[in-house]
Length: 206
Ligand SMILES: Nc1ncnc2c1ncn2[C@@H]1O[C@H](COP(=O)(O)OP(=O)(O)O)[C@@H](O)[C@H]1O
Ligand SMILES: [Mg+2]
Image 1: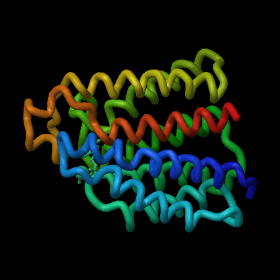
Image 2 (image 1 turned 60 degrees about the vertical axis):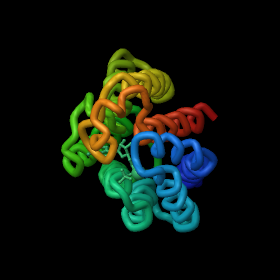
Image 3 (image 1 turned 45 degrees about the vertical axis):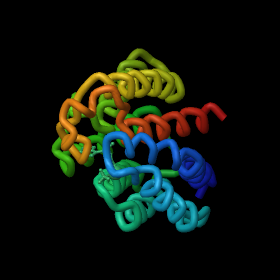
């Protein structure tokens, strides 16, 4: 397999591990202070398990999803695990990524998160970054943009999504126990999801 997907997954993992304390601090404010710890543990394991010998992008993503499912825990483990497993289906037997493939994979990942977590936009979750990111990406490539153009737009929208989460109360996940007291804080999952898209964007920009 091209080493690209392996290198990209590793870069995502390194970014999450680098931001372990930051993500955990965000979760301390409105949750139980484990988001960074959970995600860093999961991605440490992903870095160890994903290999350049995985036969195609789908296989590498599937392994990532299964590893996250079994190592991350909390709400985000099953959600991110499902997201990568669903994206893997789009890339079954594929060695390269087109702009359309990426859109289909992001769509599938989000559908998986929504099926599992039953959240919509505006509930102060990772979806508040991911749903606007998908819209921005789709609009850009429909207008003839490249995958990197699409990801630039997606990342800007995902960052705006983080800002939006500061203005609303959580109605899903642990932060919902705080009700209106969750207002003013940015959502940890929206933050890790945005970081993920930014790493992919930077990676593809090379
Ligand atoms: N139902 C849901 N749908 C989508 N994302 C969710 C949902 N519930 C929680 N999340 C995301 O998970 C993040 C918290 O993850 P984490 O701290 O690892 O799990 P836990 O809340 O179980 O401690 C939140 O910031 C939010 O973005
Ligand atoms: Mg937590």
